[in-house]
Length: 111
Length: 114
Image (cartoon, rainbow over all chains, first blue to last red; front, side, top):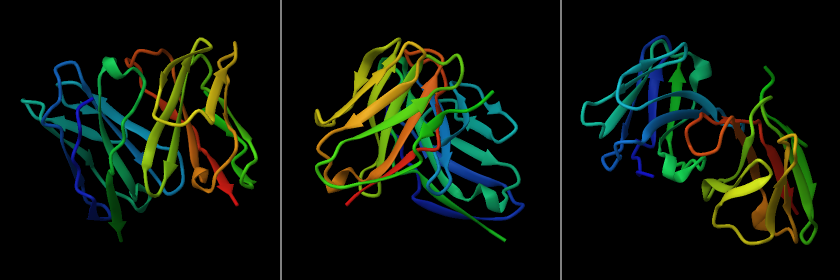
């Protein structure tokens, strides 16, 4: 699976949008971009995933660049409960159900 | 629909003992994967089971083993525990194997080895 690069940490103001970048410059054509988050000592929580098109659900939006080499997860109105480590994972069928986690981005939402 | 459940949630063992952790997947899910999370190594893939067969294995010693039952519930076993086995053990389930389905994680089992 392609490797991802994320900033180690970022702060966000409560009520503002949080934009989390992820670089995956070696992504292959059939690999998806997945986002999970992990609130302290809990199991990772699935947020959203996409292949080429932008995606939106009740939790977040995922914007994937046209060349697919990077993406941005957008939390539209961050709350204190969004404080977590956010993982961007690139996953293809070749790896089966094995997820390869990097270091993620530690997001701190401040009042 | 109930989520992935793991038991026990917390466990304390001593070096040399063995431990068995249990995972019940989301109803209808047939694939179960296990991960180890430590502060130093992060989240690492242990193995995946589908239809009672191990389909994929991470880079862990043979002391780490698992199995899956016909109802898709899975157990993992760690024998001859070492201090470095202290970790959060996470289970994830998905409907299919093959990397086409989203995986959902359980709350984890926190293992402390003294």
